[in-house]
Length: 260
Picture 1 (tube, rainbow, N blue to C red):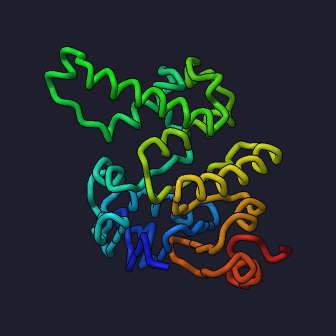
Picture 2: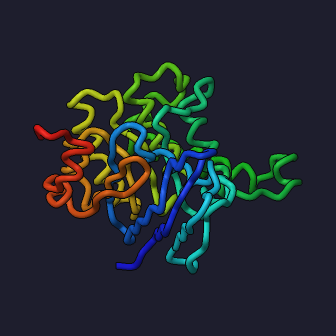
């Protein structure tokens, strides 16, 4: 299995604080990998480094697509990393809440389309055809996520669980090969979490994705992830299969608690 993501020595300092220190991660193409750790461990900071929100203070991030060679994405702009094939969701939902559900997905799809200037201004047939294709593809993504019946509702009016699903649909619309999910089950009840677990596994296969997810719900992580990395105070303290991580004394002490 070839690596789609290779992170070596990744470090991010904020003043005198090392939020992430010498982190090494590898994701093989098609893998579903978890990144866990207690609050403040640096998990979201890692995601922000991978997606260009922050530049690394040190270390390298190498991303590979099948149709291209490996490319360094550390410190590149978020839009450039997204166009390269890295999509993400956020721990705190960041939808365009005053736009419709459909328009949230349409905007994400449009980033990969290029129109001749004259065709756009005059709304010539090639432009109209492309817009119709985007509309149809957006509706199909909403159907996959179970949101097609709510396409014309404002995003702010969706129930919380549906907003989570819409954010995943919008991330998929950027056409990623690597998808980063930041606490996708946050705020969901057990039934919603079980549905989400099945959905993530299905999306991985249906869209040929590699997925890295941050999650505090251990039932989801242990059920769905093939490998897990554990962060504590910005440092990777363990990695391995769910069974190996579950039995690791450092993980029990730092994250799961001694009694677990």
